[in-house]
Amino acid sequence: MKKSVKILLGIVVALLLGGVIGIGSAVLAIERSAVSSSVINGPWRTNLATGSEQHDMYNRAWFAIHALLGLNQSESIYYFAYTDDSGERLNGDNVYRIEGNVPDARWWSITVYGEDDFLIPNEMNCYSYSGNSVTYDQDGKYTIYLSKNQKPGDWIPLGDQKSFSLALRLYNPGDSVRNNPATVDLPHVIEEAGK
Amino acid sequence: MKRWIIWTGIGTVIVAIVAHLITPIIIPIIIMNIVMNKVPPNVLMRATKTTPEVRTVVMPSADLVYSLATYDVSQEPVLFSAVVPSDSYWSMALYQENTRNFFVINDSQVKSNPVKILITKAGTQATAIPDAENVQVVMSPANKGLLLIRHLLTSDDKFLDLIKIQRQASLTPVSRLRTSDLLPECEDLLLTDAYNNTEYGFSINYPKSWIVKSPSDKNVFVATSPAKSKTIIISVRDEDSISTAINAILGESITNIKIASEKEVKLEDGTMATQAVLEFKAKDGHMEDSLASGIQKNGKYIVVMLNSVNMDTCDEVQFSKILQTFKLTK
Image (tube, rainbow over all chains, first blue to last red; front, side):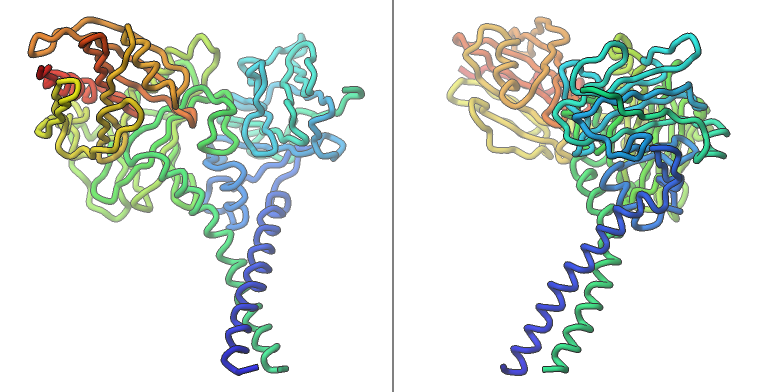
């Protein structure tokens, strides 16, 4: 083989192989960063550097892909859940019960997102519950059901999603959340028997 | 052969390291630029209630109603002005091109209502503006960025009130501000260019700086403002009311057309026209407003329509002036 052809072939191989390895490993690092640099609280995880200068480059990329335009933690803390309390991936074929107390924040909401990170279309036009719309029991607790088939009470339909995620938004969070994000009382996500 | 393998291996490692480092840096910039290019500079785009159709930004909150703008301070500072609701959460946040949220203010932190915030490029000299004591100055680290307003919708019956508040927000370059009240100075009111339609027999003037586009379907004339935030459409339709004519024009690409009001007006040459104010939802879920007038001639409606991403009083003045140049020519 001619020397010039060998050099050209070497450059092409280096660019293609290096590009695939470099971009592939970066994508893996971005997805892993969501877990590795997060504060974990039950099934929920949050990154307290959201929107700030302290966000590292992998985290910044993860938020750009999955949760663009987040506010910094002085204004809002975002918790995400991709699993239930037992650590199992949230599955659109299952029935879940979210149980919680009023969080220490000026305003809060729990929203369900489909696999594409957008709201799940449904005939009820119901995508979330918030401090304004959820039903509290006598003890100040609430229960929200997530399932394909209708459930009595507060219910968010899962449509035809195979998997889904949850976002818990705490706007103007209180000190108990800001100082103890890993231990503060957050809602439980429990898989129910049956469909 | 051995040397070739070694050098190719070294090259592969170098390319892999560079690609690995560049990818996470460039992803936020690409995504932010995609969003920024969807919104004309210094124009607030009002989103409607958040539904699965609203797909400008991932993971939108279903409980918030957003307004989004790309601010551009490369030429001069811009003044953000907004009415802040007294009974529910509201915030305005500014984002750098790399997604950093470098400024946020909420309803409990504003010092005046309406709140006025001057966004200026860091490192530039302070701009003298009237009423300075009520204007907060924010330095933008770059020429461009995103501005996002969040309005909490506490219940569906408050949506109309929320829209009224949403409409009162504006983003205006300082050279366009009236010194008396810091409201936008209306521009493009000199209607020197004329469109003549010999087939249906009418003429109308439009702003010189506007760009004439090729009309589609039954539209006969289309022109957009330089910032692409406003469009004039003139269409001739076989309909028996302005409502059905408007639906026929917009209905092909747009949903949720709501005609807010209709009235009869007399144009300068004595021609009677029906004028309507309408609101509709564009494909990506953001709201647009329209002013439309229909002139009946030979059993057809000649509809003149001004669509705007964020209709303000200047748009109303401009539409009225455009309409007054309408003349039947045969």
